[in-house]
Amino acid sequence: MRKKLFEGLLLAAGLALVPWLAVLWTTLPDPYPAQHWRIAWVGFDALEIAGLLTSAMLVRRSDHRAPLASVATAVLLLVDAWFDVMTAGHYVVISLTLACTLELPLAALCAVVALRPPMVASVQATAVQRVAVHA
Image 1 (spheres, rainbow, N blue to C red):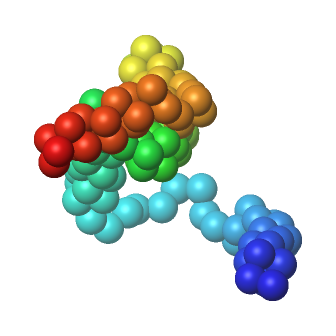
Image 2 (cartoon, rainbow, N blue to C red):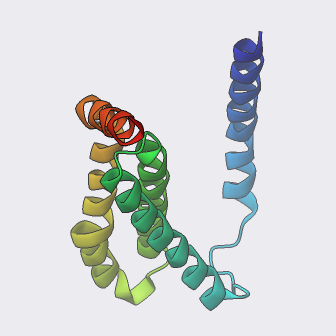
Image 3 (tube, rainbow, N blue to C red):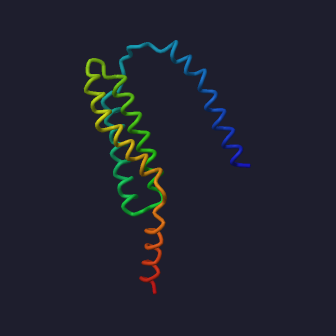
């Protein structure tokens, strides 16, 4: 029951946003002065740092949550690359270079971590170690 409800809500939300794209495309101005530009970008990059460090820690521990942190971090990196390039203006070559050499490869690495098979052997080894300690 819940699965169908969640599926229906997600589907409805996704479809409802399609016409919203047309509204945005036709009403948003091309140039727009942004408020709190520095805070927005520093905060966004801080989220990327937190995601990368959290992913590294969870991978090191063979934690089953590593794929979740990694996929979230991959999405942040892809969004960062997109907005860097789209808002670069005269610095588009620098933004493209950074996207191609840093953000996109890191996003791919995070995707590999997120999609790799679970580390069953290390999970079993950890369980055996815990039993041995308590025995």
